[in-house]
Image 1: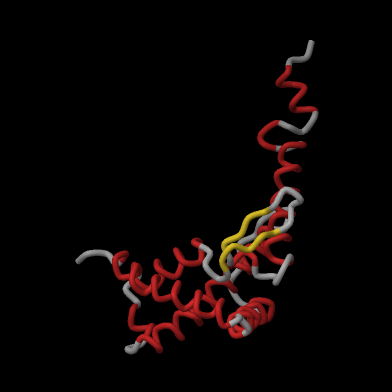
Image 2: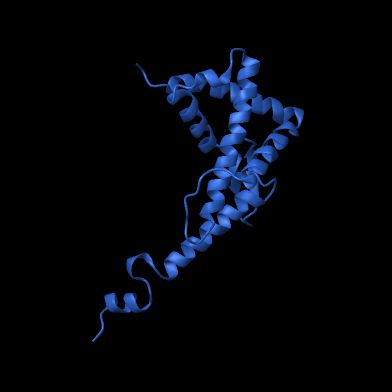
Amino acid sequence: MTTKQDDKKTNGEHHGHGLSTFKAITYRKRVIEKITMDADGLVFMHIYTFDQDRRVEIKARFQNPFIMSNIIRFIWFGLRQDFLGETEEEQLQNLKYMWALAGAATFCSLDKQSEIKVQVDRFGGMACNRKFLAILSAMDDLTDDELEELRRFLRYVLLVGPTQAPSS
């Protein structure tokens, strides 16, 4: 006589293996593909949603809260404000470069996540460099309105960031 537990073992569903795991991996790979290849190939850097037909809708370009969180953590929580420079113009320009770097790192991490067996690899290589340059190019190619919106957002980050620094 077999039990339900025995049936799960023979179907490969014991300990997280089987159809549900396969579906989760397939879903993860599809989402990663959409946010790294659809639209401008930089969806993961934007605030976005999916419509009912699974198309990407970009709500705000280069304002993803995950990227913002990483930048704030690196600069202010890590007490590295000196990277930003003195003037607001220097700070905005350097923040833009850091944003592109954080985006390239995120892309490379997502790229690794799309593999069936997730591997942690060192950051580097030409793919990450090309993505960094593509992000900078896309930022430079924003319309005047989009560029002004991005500058407002980066100014907001410059205001909020210092509040995240650890108190001494």
